[in-house]
Image: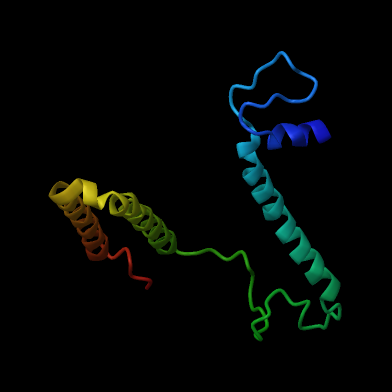
Amino acid sequence: MADMIALFLQAPGQLPRGSADLPISAPIYGYVPIIIFFLIAVAVPVVLLGASRLIQRRVFERQKLLPYECGIDPIGDARERFSVRFYMVAMLFLIFDVETVFLFPWAVIYDKLALFGLVEMLVFIGILVVGYYYAWQKGAFDWA
Protein backbone atom coordinates (compact mmCIF):
# COMPACT_ATOMS: atom_id res chain seq x y z
CA MET A 1 0.00 0.00 0.00
CA ALA A 2 2.84 2.38 0.84
CA ASP A 3 4.44 1.67 -2.54
CA MET A 4 1.15 2.53 -4.25
CA ILE A 5 0.93 5.87 -2.42
CA ALA A 6 4.59 6.58 -3.20
CA LEU A 7 3.89 5.81 -6.86
CA PHE A 8 1.04 8.36 -6.89
CA LEU A 9 3.10 11.01 -5.10
CA GLN A 10 6.29 10.64 -7.10
CA ALA A 11 7.80 13.66 -8.77
CA PRO A 12 8.28 13.68 -12.54
CA GLY A 13 11.34 11.71 -13.60
CA GLN A 14 11.71 9.75 -10.37
CA LEU A 15 11.66 5.99 -10.32
CA PRO A 16 9.47 3.99 -7.97
CA ARG A 17 11.19 1.99 -5.25
CA GLY A 18 12.33 -1.48 -6.25
CA SER A 19 12.43 -0.89 -10.01
CA ALA A 20 15.66 0.91 -10.84
CA ASP A 21 15.65 -0.22 -14.48
CA LEU A 22 12.09 0.86 -15.46
CA PRO A 23 11.84 4.56 -16.33
CA ILE A 24 8.54 6.35 -15.73
CA SER A 25 7.31 8.09 -18.87
CA ALA A 26 4.32 9.93 -17.37
CA PRO A 27 3.90 10.79 -13.69
CA ILE A 28 0.83 9.33 -12.07
CA TYR A 29 0.78 11.78 -9.19
CA GLY A 30 -1.60 13.97 -11.21
CA TYR A 31 -4.39 11.57 -10.25
CA VAL A 32 -4.07 12.31 -6.53
CA PRO A 33 -6.51 15.29 -6.61
CA ILE A 34 -9.06 13.12 -8.42
CA ILE A 35 -8.73 10.38 -5.82
CA ILE A 36 -9.03 12.89 -2.98
CA PHE A 37 -12.10 14.43 -4.63
CA PHE A 38 -13.65 10.97 -5.05
CA LEU A 39 -13.00 10.11 -1.40
CA ILE A 40 -14.57 13.39 -0.24
CA ALA A 41 -17.53 12.84 -2.59
CA VAL A 42 -18.12 9.43 -1.01
CA ALA A 43 -17.41 10.50 2.58
CA VAL A 44 -19.68 13.57 2.73
CA PRO A 45 -22.98 11.75 1.97
CA VAL A 46 -22.04 8.83 4.20
CA VAL A 47 -21.22 11.14 7.13
CA LEU A 48 -24.33 13.28 6.63
CA LEU A 49 -26.65 10.29 6.33
CA GLY A 50 -25.06 8.69 9.38
CA ALA A 51 -25.42 11.91 11.40
CA SER A 52 -29.07 12.29 10.40
CA ARG A 53 -29.69 8.67 11.35
CA LEU A 54 -28.24 9.33 14.82
CA ILE A 55 -30.27 12.47 15.54
CA GLN A 56 -33.56 11.55 13.87
CA ARG A 57 -36.81 11.41 15.80
CA ARG A 58 -38.01 7.84 16.05
CA VAL A 59 -41.61 8.46 17.14
CA PHE A 60 -44.04 7.29 14.47
CA GLU A 61 -47.56 8.65 14.86
CA ARG A 62 -50.65 7.60 12.94
CA GLN A 63 -50.36 10.63 10.66
CA LYS A 64 -46.73 9.83 9.91
CA LEU A 65 -47.61 6.32 8.72
CA LEU A 66 -50.21 7.52 6.20
CA PRO A 67 -49.20 7.35 2.52
CA TYR A 68 -49.55 11.13 2.12
CA GLU A 69 -48.47 13.74 4.64
CA CYS A 70 -50.38 16.65 3.14
CA GLY A 71 -53.10 16.63 5.81
CA ILE A 72 -55.80 15.15 3.57
CA ASP A 73 -56.73 11.50 3.82
CA PRO A 74 -56.22 9.69 0.52
CA ILE A 75 -59.45 9.08 -1.38
CA GLY A 76 -59.79 6.50 -4.14
CA ASP A 77 -57.28 4.21 -5.75
CA ALA A 78 -53.74 5.33 -6.57
CA ARG A 79 -53.83 3.35 -9.82
CA GLU A 80 -56.55 5.33 -11.57
CA ARG A 81 -56.27 6.00 -15.28
CA PHE A 82 -55.07 9.32 -16.61
CA SER A 83 -56.22 11.02 -19.77
CA VAL A 84 -54.05 10.72 -22.85
CA ARG A 85 -53.77 14.52 -22.82
CA PHE A 86 -51.76 14.30 -19.60
CA TYR A 87 -49.15 12.17 -21.36
CA MET A 88 -49.21 14.44 -24.43
CA VAL A 89 -48.43 17.48 -22.31
CA ALA A 90 -45.67 15.57 -20.52
CA MET A 91 -44.09 14.50 -23.83
CA LEU A 92 -44.36 18.01 -25.29
CA PHE A 93 -42.71 19.40 -22.17
CA LEU A 94 -39.86 16.93 -22.49
CA ILE A 95 -39.41 17.66 -26.18
CA PHE A 96 -39.30 21.43 -25.72
CA ASP A 97 -37.17 21.13 -22.58
CA VAL A 98 -34.60 18.92 -24.30
CA GLU A 99 -34.56 21.23 -27.30
CA THR A 100 -33.70 24.20 -25.10
CA VAL A 101 -30.71 22.29 -23.71
CA PHE A 102 -29.09 22.94 -27.11
CA LEU A 103 -28.96 26.64 -26.22
CA PHE A 104 -26.15 26.11 -23.68
CA PRO A 105 -23.40 24.94 -26.06
CA TRP A 106 -24.35 27.74 -28.43
CA ALA A 107 -24.04 30.28 -25.61
CA VAL A 108 -20.61 28.94 -24.66
CA ILE A 109 -19.12 29.51 -28.13
CA TYR A 110 -21.32 32.44 -29.16
CA ASP A 111 -18.36 34.81 -29.58
CA LYS A 112 -16.73 32.43 -32.10
CA LEU A 113 -19.89 31.99 -34.16
CA ALA A 114 -20.64 35.71 -34.54
CA LEU A 115 -23.55 36.62 -36.84
CA PHE A 116 -23.81 33.13 -38.38
CA GLY A 117 -24.42 31.61 -34.93
CA LEU A 118 -27.04 34.23 -34.12
CA VAL A 119 -28.95 33.56 -37.34
CA GLU A 120 -28.76 29.80 -36.82
CA MET A 121 -30.10 30.11 -33.27
CA LEU A 122 -32.91 32.40 -34.37
CA VAL A 123 -33.92 29.79 -36.96
CA PHE A 124 -33.76 27.07 -34.28
CA ILE A 125 -35.89 29.08 -31.86
CA GLY A 126 -38.28 29.93 -34.71
CA ILE A 127 -38.79 26.22 -35.40
CA LEU A 128 -39.49 25.65 -31.70
CA VAL A 129 -42.02 28.49 -31.63
CA VAL A 130 -43.78 27.11 -34.73
CA GLY A 131 -43.97 23.67 -33.10
CA TYR A 132 -45.27 25.16 -29.87
CA TYR A 133 -47.89 27.17 -31.75
CA TYR A 134 -48.97 24.07 -33.73
CA ALA A 135 -49.39 22.05 -30.51
CA TRP A 136 -51.32 24.91 -28.94
CA GLN A 137 -53.69 25.19 -31.93
CA LYS A 138 -54.30 21.44 -31.91
CA GLY A 139 -55.40 21.70 -28.27
CA ALA A 140 -52.57 19.58 -26.84
CA PHE A 141 -52.31 21.89 -23.83
CA ASP A 142 -56.03 21.81 -22.93
CA TRP A 143 -56.71 19.69 -19.84
CA ALA A 144 -60.47 19.44 -20.16
